[in-house]
Image 1: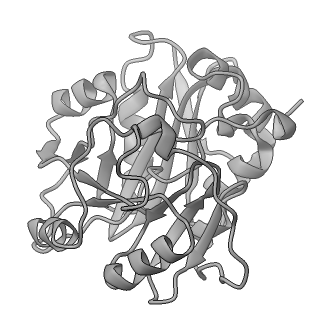
Image 2: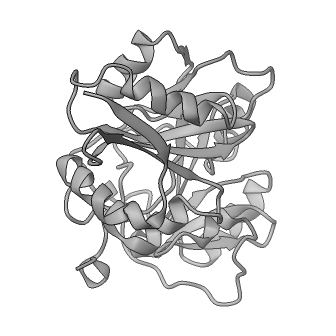
Length: 282
């Protein structure tokens, strides 16, 4: 069976939802029109690549989001496996015209695909966690309690922070973060002024903060400021899910440049989880 590959527009969203239903629960954010337009629109420069079979039906989907000199592939989906040789490669080829390719947080099937295609597996990313001294004695489930959103903070300027349904802020020292008030946490995007950020968090009742690092220097910096490796703390907090873990793997098609420093803004690591009932699409 033949196929064609092109960039998608929002007019393709309804047809793409048929493919999404094969992979995702009904409250996944890609079903939400405003989220789809943010993820694959001008705010962050992301593009959606779509493969169509000879009847014009959606056969494949690939998100491509630029960041850090690389193009991060997300949501690699095909309608059926094995029936259209070269389909995934053709979608990769179109994405490659934007820059060198990378994938973060590939699931088992995705990791096998990338390794089969000869990609470089980089050292895993590391997630570190700070828990406020006020709640360190509590079990993790009790730490995940709501806090009040503070007034007077500004949202960072990047289009990444225009993501629907997630609050964000520039903290007093200049660090940027996502505000997960429903579970009392700050998901740090930058942490150059982490001591000031944590002091602010503790003074305002925030219960935990996490960060993701790719370099030993960043890891040691956070460990020195009270962060820990806490595999018992859930990765998914929209809502909290203790049943699922995530391997923070990182794959690149080419070797990484010297000194590369991963950012939480890349790929889809910091997007919203499952949608609340009051914003579900019809």
